[in-house]
Length: 429
Image (cartoon, rainbow, N blue to C red; front, side, top):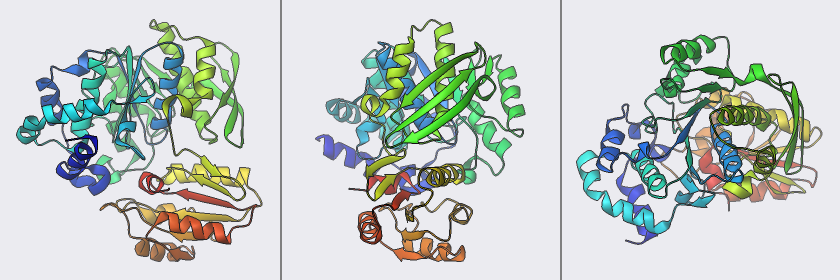
């Protein structure tokens, strides 16, 4: 098989959460453990940093990888889902996984697939670990797929764990309360291994402290130690002034990720850099600033307040849950206070769409659409639900048709916001 055939085989043969949802989720680590055991336990052959959280874990992973690359470390990066190309999931120093390696790995593991019957995610996690071990990376940033405790990535022994925040998402799997969700995320806290909590709430703080105490893990709280003094998003960049309360040192950061919400992730990343420095990593201030200033160029991150056109502005964002959508709506009010907003929306069918739609303004214009995956919420259903919240608009089976009509109706000063799902963004031409 060539690369294209191999990827199609993976999509066709293995249950894939991003396509079919909960039916693909395996509620234990058995398959991943068995796969990696057969491969010689590659996850123990490189240093790693484990990152979980409801929102921001992808951006945080890419930021940290960019900084470590600029500091001169051969850096692996495993994230999910991908937007355009499967290879986005597995990178080393910014370059996507070698296509020949993917083909060879799938051929080598076909007998294991028959024996173990893994999901798509379980096999790709094993593939990433095997690739990082084979290529002898200095450090790998590993983003959880879903949750933490039972996530396939949770067989690593990291040098640092990071939990960005806790919010409502995937409640059908992780639990219906914030403490329940926090318990799942806290599952990545390992024995004698420092952990950073980017943001905590009164309901989640005791969960993290209890787990860290059980694991004898030093716990560090970013929101208590790093303060955003000011932030400003202009065009394709974010200017952020941050105070390190531990040293009373200010820092001025310019990022090529213009979402205002990135200021919180920047604080978490600066905290991680501080702790990495204390455990032996040589990361200069210049590496931090260059890494954060060029995340998209260095690591290929997409879909985070990504402005693909101006006049009218067309912005793509993978925000898909309550907290993420709130942040997008807040920034629209700040950056485009007097503009007519056109929302191109599409969601998957396992979200509490009503709760999310209740956040949107009735005075905006709506273009309801869907991705072409089994898990997508049909645009007709989304349109009907939207009407219950006084959100009026037109339905489209194709996101690009929706965007084109929005462009026809939009004035030059208007803004077209495309959000609701990774998979909607993936289908934008």
